[in-house]
Length: 156
Image (cartoon, rainbow, N blue to C red):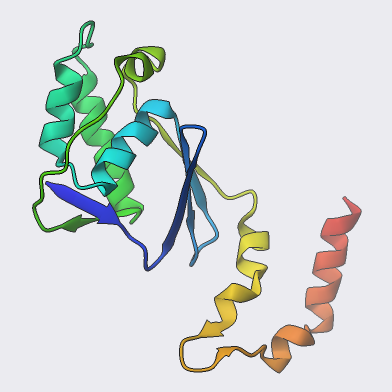
């Protein structure tokens, strides 16, 4: 099975071997450990799940739970709509044994919503393909209830 990044909704960046993926519609972002990032990066570069799993299984000291964890990881990314199924392709697989060993062959993706309000408040969400960013009057003049709610959060 092959996958691609759901670039209609997601913005992704890999920095220092760690992937951060932001859902532009919900403001939720996802972080992965180093092995999860390596698998994700191979996926979006065209490698199939089968070839990635085979590469991991060929490494020494692989735990019996690897395949179950791998499938759970892929399922989680698909359910969160981070990745979408794509046409078959055969990109090469590149995962370092040291990365897999350091994470004990555990693939991890975590969901965060602590910056959700800030990410959704970004005016990029108001961009329309036909007209660009033209703020709606309501976004420039929030109602008094909204102002009170935001001020109360700032006082905490």
